[in-house]
Length: 288
Figure: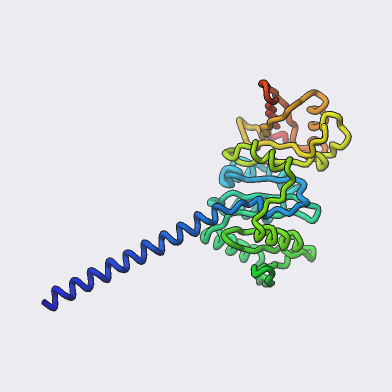
């Protein structure tokens, strides 16, 4: 009888442990899913000029960052530390870069595994220094000393990791995240809805940043948007526009050539009753 009772107790204990393990697992899954529901665009302060959303970092890394010509193009706009994080963490989820007068802001969904990977990478990058910790809004901010008297800062909150070399941008992003409101200009928000999130990356580029100020064909539009991808040895951008003509093409080509001499885009255009669809591709030959 005692043996029988002992077996019952052991079985009940095993069942209890199994139930607790399942509950713990479901809780972790629920937390991870809730993290993925955070809209990264709520992080972005109002003075944004351009956006780059990397939807598939693994493909973006393999097809673009590993190509020296393209790596150099992205490195002219994005601090190398962010590109390094994408290159070294092959499981990284969606990444959003926003560009401001104060600098570049980087935000991404970050569960426990991604957060641990990023923090380990940063520790190795900034050896032997330890980050300075500061707290604001109930959020812990960490700052590493970098070259040229700069500090690289980041915080982690509610499943989102955010980093920048601008302390002001970082603090404003935290405030935006707590508010939960998207403060992007309406035109930029409308363009976001037209982009293909299955492409490796999307871009919304400021026409002012391209130096396009007084062209009649702009018709008051401040941004150009497109999907970025690599195809058959070329770096391409696919865009949907309400109009397109030779003056527009020549102006864009001239500005791109001035800003990114290694890119030599050619354009193909098709249309239907609603819009004109543009594919601009630059060959990635050895000569580039």
